[in-house]
Amino acid sequence: MNSTPQPEAARPGTTSLIPVFVQLKLSLLRNGLQQSSRRKAVYVTSIVLVGLFTALELLGLIALRGTAHMAALTTLLVVVLALGWAVMPLFFASGDETLDPTRLVMLPLRPVPLVVALLTASLIGIGPVFTLAIVVGSVIATANGAAATVVGVLAAVLVLLVCLALARAVATANIRLLTSRRGRDLAVLSGLIIGVGMQFVNIGVQRLGAAGGLRALAPVADVLRWVPPGSAMDAVRAAGEGSYGVAAAELALTAAALALLLWWWQRSLTRLMTAPDSSTLQASTEPDKARAQRPGLASVLPTGRTGAVMVRSLRYIWRDPKTKTAWMSSLTLGLLVPMLNAAQGHGSLYFAFFAPALLGMQMYNQFGQDTSAFWMVLQTIASPRDAYVELRARALALSLIAVPYVILAVTGVAAVTRAWRSLPEVLGMSFAMLGALLGTGGMTSALFPYSIPQDGGFKNVAPGQAGIAWLSLFGGLLAGTVVCSPLIALTIWLHVSANLGLMWILLPLGVAYGFCAAWLGLRLAGPRVVARLPEILLAVSKG
Image 1 (tube, rainbow, N blue to C red):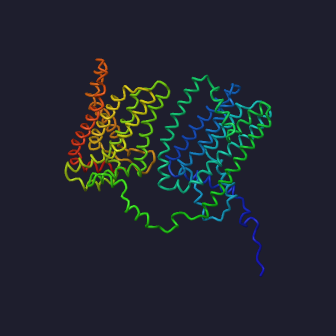
Image 2 (spheres, rainbow, N blue to C red):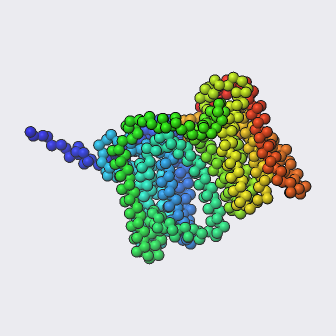
Image 3 (cartoon, rainbow, N blue to C red):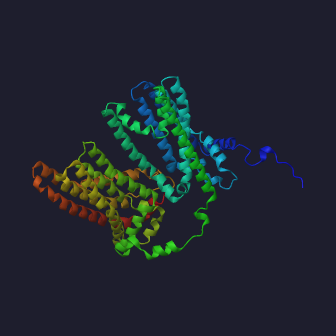
């Protein structure tokens, strides 16, 4: 039987995927901007801000040309850029639909052409342009001579391709995680990680200024110049100094890293497009049976309503992205801020108050964490006693984490600062502050509830409720400070009167004072919760 020859351009694999995916990327950008004027305004604003920042960075690098140890700065800068490209897809994978290769699973595409097409399409966007501008500026600031310029052109191309391939490979290898609930948790936690990273950057800049300029970066650069893509940037310096063998070796190292990344990316694509995921596998009931036989934390908590509410609160902390983010931020910053100040030699043990202050604030807006599910809690509150038990159980769940954490934070800062004589008073005041914030948190939860939206990773207050949120936060902190004022006055009096031998009494007094402040605040909050149940339900359901 004779068959009609298939046109060459229509045969599978003969048509280049590159123009198709480039047009797809441009169409996604265009269609996304056409969805709303707000999105278009945000995109244009991003272009303007990134463009200004890029221009300033580029001018700064060019102005530093010829500075001693400039190669150390550019090498470190390129490695930091690559690190940013590696971690950003883990946090913002939903911001670029082309990062999700699972959308292409049903298409008859081979991994190698797909990798080339996706890598080419990745060149389109604000991020690649910003990266290329910074790399070009680094090459201009480092290159010295014609040979270094030629090497710099090759280095710029390699650095850009390594950054893009690294981002794609990481996103592809973790796409199952990124599209799951845990992936959304990771995205919400990105703000915390970025904030902590900025603290270390701030310390690094301070140390850099104290150490006399770029010379302090030389030891770090000696290590990073053999870490791709930093090795490609250091090749520019080596070529300018006449070390052509070293320059060739560093370029070859970066090229080998690029090849390894492309291979990893291709393997991940093959596995992703051929292996079944959890949605195609038969569900098993064995884990549910196992969980039923192992009550876990519930077995060591009180029985009845108190234990049930504590378990629910602890599960919120572990499972709800917004609640988890707030807790992780408080736990990290409550220990990081005093430790960093102590490590720099000008810290004080009183910086440890960050720990009880940040954790005590988690008691505020307790009902807002329930969102619209608060109506189920409402069904169980029929009297001030019920409301008091509900708030008490939530405070106990918070205390299970806060009390040992405060002890650890204060003791750790005391060990770093060697201020052991001040440990009893600071620990006692910390417990008093924690108790006061638990009590005032119960009151503000009843008087100033507000909704926490669930549709955005960085929206913590529903529209129109920002004033209520600020009033709850600062009003509660002010009330907590006023509640602690008698103990603060006693501490000041002991210092002024030089009765330092009696400072130890602040520890038992602080524990007792904090307990009484929490108990009284929750007792007073109970009747107000019952009286305002409809208002609380309406307020927390707006998100």
